[in-house]
Image 1: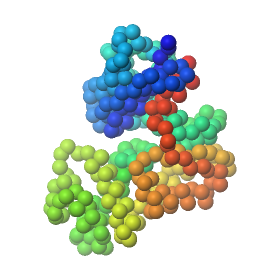
Image 2: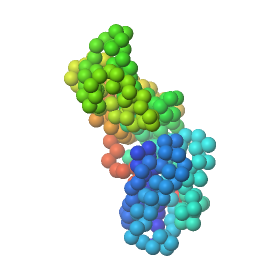
Image 3: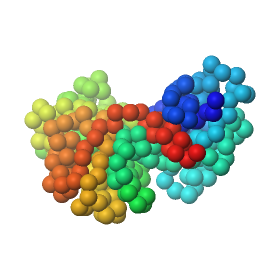
Image 4: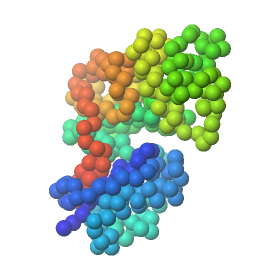
Length: 310
């Protein structure tokens, strides 16, 4: 039997799936993050190898080689990232198991898109802790917008929502902005008692954008409870997500065509003030858009792309 390897390497976890050439899953392993921007190259290698070793645990590792493989990594956005991820993938444990001519290394949005849609015109919008938008048209041309991480461009993300919520709390505390339910709701959510405690929590080391991104949940709760400040924050984040999708639509020439929009990430659970606003605004601009939740794991897309590359 010939074996296929698909990997979804995210900022939170890494999933490795072994399949046959028909796409049937044979084994799967999960480990920690493999975004080297977050954990460093040595830890990314360790976590990647751990996920694959877990999947290989039922076999004699030395006897399994992969005729084709596909790796989707968060944080793969530049040529220097390509060099780093080549080093991560072709490490001492894996290099003899991979066919270098049939090993694909992509940004994780590409494997998510492959998992989410079989339409020739398709876009994926990620709105979780981070944000990203990537698409491909029937001519095979691709395009990207946003997803440059929390300093350069992360609008529409949980991190951006959380950061703006913290700033709104401080504006209200200073008298520079209007009062908001966010103060009480976020203090309670974090199980802390005061603004002083909030300041300490915010600046404690090591820095983690995941902690800030997690605040998107109480922001949504406050909005649902009628808090105007939270509703404005979510409206702005939805607007930014629409801008990202529109940029990709225009680059791919899909304005008057049918296309799928695959929606991924916890922010879409904020239905009334984020998801509905976003889908309403996009539907008013693009009549051919079809909204799809991601129902299959992104690693499914990695396997699918590896098989197509045979």
